Length: 349
Image 1: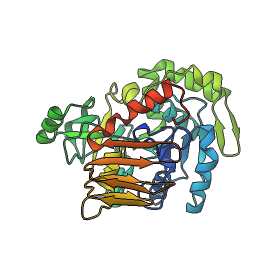
Image 2: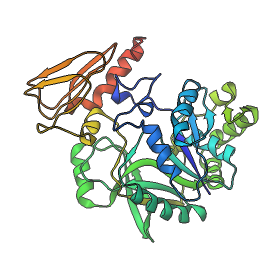
Image 3: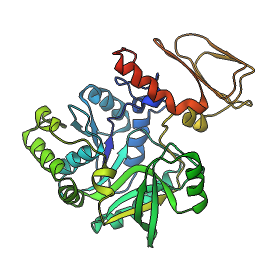
């Protein structure tokens, strides 16, 4: 049986000012009426032979996530992190909580996948490898030279998957174009499937300090109903690292399964524009918006009328306490503004 593990610890800083620390993007309805975490939970609930998910999040989001998933008939177990320690400790905590024989499907809470059938086929392929002890990740088949994602280079073909040759950091535009032309690079999706014991053994081998800290954390932690709250002191001593860096880049039993399913991590405003419905001039709007001569822009209003005149390829986002105006080509730089707000101690972060 597959145990989905939904990671909901991120803040989605490049989608500020809609996505905040208190109300991150996974809890918002960015496409359609469902929130991103609702869409994620609904998708995996439709898998065959699947258990209720484990949701890893922080304390302030437990109640809201529970309330959002209840109408879907999903009753998650929660693992509550007192501090963020990236994805590798979160997956290890889930592995220890689920039991060493569990087959864990690790999923970020904030991705969009248009073709559920293609996703399920990829999961079926991955499950066969994972059941035999492999550590499997999903590599998205690229359709453009993207500089906002890391890449995985395919190694030798094995069945309908590939050994992992290497992981590659986010490239510049010229390098990304080369990757697309070569055809042997996939986008790193941040999704994984593996047996709990295989992951824990790899963690003990490649990141022993983290494995030791997580074991101590679980022993010191408390469970109340369906919520495992990680001990703050023990978890604070755990190193912070991603699954990629801590395990996958060092393991010799890694497998990548290609995924061609209309995937997006909705990581920025230009990415959301790409996914959204648009008018005849290529504009995506939400809220009380009036346009005059605007083209290929994304405009969202919340509390008041927003008028945009003559702008092209623009981002205009209005909230109750902040307004963002930017060009789409600078969409990745919104994170820099969030970093400045955080450094200044501004409440808008």
